[in-house]
Structure formats: structure tokens, C-alpha cells
Image (cartoon, rainbow, N blue to C red; front, side, top):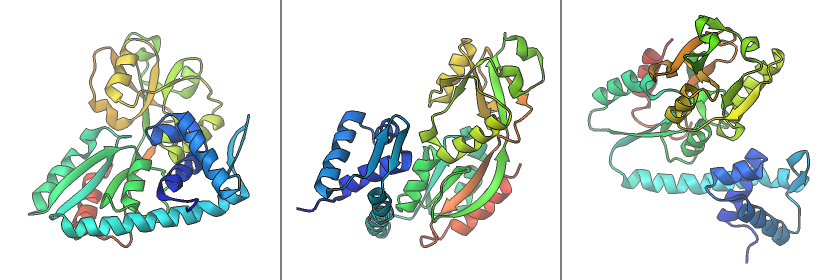
Length: 296
């Protein structure tokens, strides 16, 4: 019996990417205890520790660092084989991912133009956090994806398109709502909703660097993945939220949006990503329309 199989490799790679068992379990749609047991069982079968666990966190051992690139390569090959069979059997379609880090209305003009010019090709959309979209494109499950940048895109081709500055959503009755422009220093002692690193690791790290530069360390609250729920919490006065500027399109009584002085420093990019070896026939059209419709 082999010590390694695709299930074990998937679990190992998820933990290796997050270096956090709880966050990896959430991405895998399972709870932490069975994930920890599965990794321990894998280490026992291999006769080698893959992760160091201590009070400081989780880190790959030398054995883990050796296994990771090989595991990713094996999973990529299997995914590519499956995707090629699915492509041959599927009707003409363009599978496009849309990052949930931007308000969906930002993409509507592009999608309308794309559907108008695709002819007989059917457009299939998937909305998800950018890391999940990157994985789907790499596996051949999506033909291309509009991502929030920075993101870890590995071996994908990426076309940068635009930037979305960050702004502040706050309760309409808050004293700062009287200001047209608010700085991080103004909200240094406020409760601020913020997303978990596992949802967008590269962009999270970028923002943390900016926060440190400005000495910004408020009481962060865990952000709800659904932005309508998040804005409902803001309207209820539970906290403020830093959001991409596109979310101004979401109108909710009790919530106002204000320009953030450091908004450009915290800006999220928008980029189109696709596989170098999986060029869809409609990709040139998609690239052209994305560049013209998503310019700031």
C-alpha cells in the first residue's frame, strides 16, 4: 500500500499553503481535528515529520519542503489530465472566475460585452476568493479568472488591468461621518472589520505592511464573507470596514462611505489570469474587452 495518495497530498498541500491547520480545514470544508489526525497518520506512514508545530505557529520541516513541490506537480498533472478530458467532452464554453474581493457590479459591463461577442460560446461564471480561483485555473477547471492582486499566481500568465483604492464604510451616525476624508490615524482606536489571511494571503500581507508603516493596529473584527451581512453589521454600529472602492455600489441605510487617505497605498489590483498551456479560443477577445472595460 502506498503511503501517498491524492487525498493525502491534497490535505498536505492545503496545510503547507496556509501554515495554519484551522484555516486549511476551512478551505477543505472540514473541521480541524480530523485534518490534524490525517496529517499525523501521513507522517507516520512516511516515517518523517512534515510540519513543526509550536506556540509560534506551523512551519514546514526539511522533509515537508522536499515533498511540497513534488506534491503540487503530481496534483497539477492529474488535474490537467482530467481537465483535458472534460474539455473534449464539453460543449463550447468559456469558464470565467470572478474575484469576490470586488463588488460584482464592477464586472457587469465587461460581461455584457463579452456575452454579446462570444457567439455560440456559452459563458459560465464562478465567483470565489482569488486563491480558490487561482487553484481552479491551474487545475483546468476554469479557463481564466479576474483576480484581486497581489495574489500568489504561481505559473499562471497574468495581465494587470486596474487598481481599486480602499475606502472606509462606517455607521452614518458616527462622528467621523462628518469628514469627507478619513485617515488610518483617525480610526486607530476603532473596531475595524478585516478579512482572514487565508482568504487572500498575498493581499493580506501587502496591507499588513502598509498598516505597520502607519502604526495602525486597531481592534480587528472578523469580517463576514458575505458583504451584505458585513454592511449590516456596520449599519448596526458594531464596527467599520475597509473595502475596495467598488463596494460603493452597495447602498444600505445606516452606512456611509468615505475616502481613505491611505486608500491608494492599500489599493487592490485587478488582473486576468490564465494557463500558459491552456489558451482558450476566446481568450484574445476576453483580454481585449477586459483591458477596455476595467480601466480606471
